[in-house]
Length: 148
Image (cartoon, rainbow, N blue to C red; front, side, top):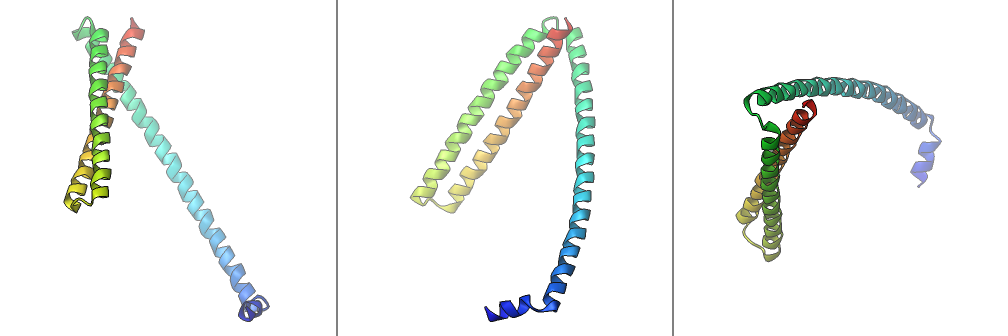
């Protein structure tokens, strides 16, 4: 405790505190500036990507309108099928998660635990992919319905 009190009374200690705080302030300023520029670049990239996706969606809706007379109804059935498949994958992923917990509790071999984790990850990715495909079909069906 006496060392701490002597450090507080030392001008050398106070000078090092001031220098370190100035350095932290300058580094913080540059890091904040870099983060702001990265954020702006990311938002610009996302906006351009969304515009490109929106254009592709309109082009696909136009193509479907010309090739299929009942494209909106067909897309609704595709959406429902994909949502059901997504729910199946989600249910299977939750089953894999339960198996992982059970295998961990009973002390199953590590390879079996890793297999269930990999199975869960694969099923989760399939669930996400099917959900995105269903959302795309829904967006296309709405575009077709709105344009009629």
